Length: 404
Picture 1 (tube, rainbow, N blue to C red):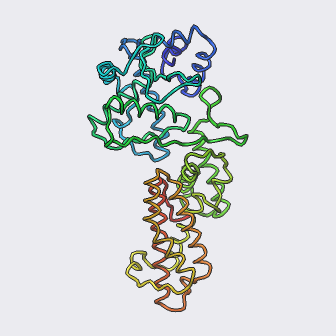
Picture 2: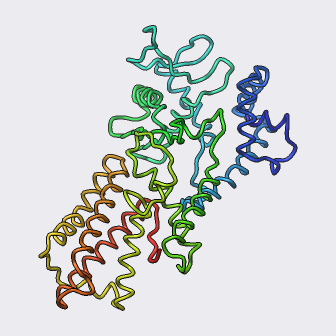
Picture 3: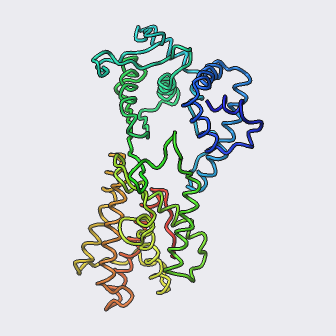
């Protein structure tokens, strides 16, 4: 679709704005049957390694990766150039898929297409539901690529656990995919394959924010807006803050990440600037501010944080005990988050930790403690809290500034 649209409308890859380009092609594909037919033919040419089509595909891919890398850099995603593997990287394994499915009799012809009927799947009429491998026009469906990918990951990468982080609307596809892969012995029971489903991001009107067929949200623009809005929020609290611009980046990008990760992943959530940038509640700015507040305690005292780590901890006040209990649960919260593929569990824990610290700090004087031993103990508790918040946020891909 994209290659055909480029050939008919553009002269240079550099002229393309990817968001506009995709929207134009999608609208034309949906409303112009002739263009849709030509686009499908172009897919077959691409999969057949037609030189002109492949050359254009590489150029569009490279231009796309340049834009992706801008987003990755903003998000702090640590990917090397050779690490992202799109579906095209598995094309060479598709003949292996066909050969194996045919050799064991799983693949059959249905209405001109090559399909597999996984056991237990039926359509609304009660007829067997097919997974299309090769379409009637000769083009391969994404099911073929997904099966090729499984073969590569199991046999060449020797993966024993494969995680697919894809929206929950693809639930049926992955259930059928895993069923076919096991029936074909592409992976046995020792291989764990998991579809990690997630919900939708909704606008204020309760509708999906980004639609492939409609007006999509520009993520780069969202992240830029997040930084500007974070800067405004920080200016209101601390207009004299040094390094304001870098702190705004840390807080703004962190707020967007945390809003997504703190929501139970199968739930939809409403994208709300005021909520995600709030310094109260289960938000990244609240946690970052708690961390910065602790760093401020040490700056004011002139005490190095490392120096209090050997201090004896004495827990006498109830809020000290409560904070200690929460700190001690970090490993358990992290394990639960990992075991359930649910980062929101870690977020919930971090919020409870910051809340417990706020109570502790309100009722238990730290720098003004009644004696040296108590002060050392409470300073050590502050340091433990800050390290735990910083570690937890770091695991979520969010930095913890020392000043806000």
